[in-house]
Length: 144
Image (tube, rainbow, N blue to C red; front, top):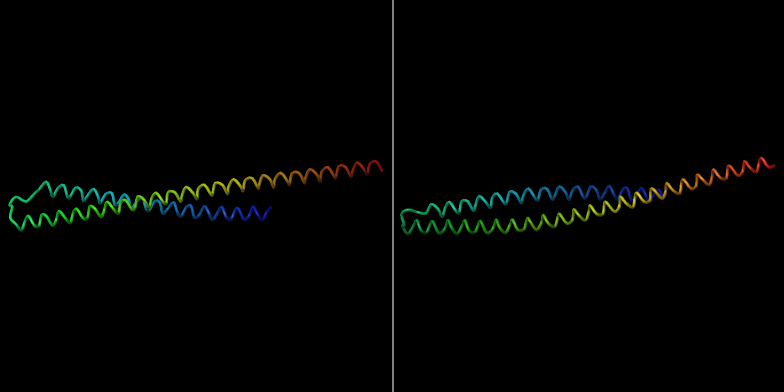
């Protein structure tokens, strides 16, 4: 029983370290998602600024430049939106892993507690049996 308890204790420690590692991955992914959100808002602001301050002189070259800038900004916005969606999906996946590891650690801790209480109960039972045997042997000696 002692070896089982040690094994479960070691497994619990291993699962806890993995859970902590996954937690740090989740924090990093959330930080990256926040950065992407700020980039996305900056690009959206730039695009709205670009549309708000149109070219005063409507020359052909300036219209072409304006169209090219608009396409580039739209492409960057689309890319940032896609990247943000990917990061959010990754965050959700990591969150699910973290919950799974936390549940596993909790389950292992419960098993460890049950086994320790069982071991404690068995030891108390053995000690009681030894005490009864000692008392019985002393009573036999007195009768003789």
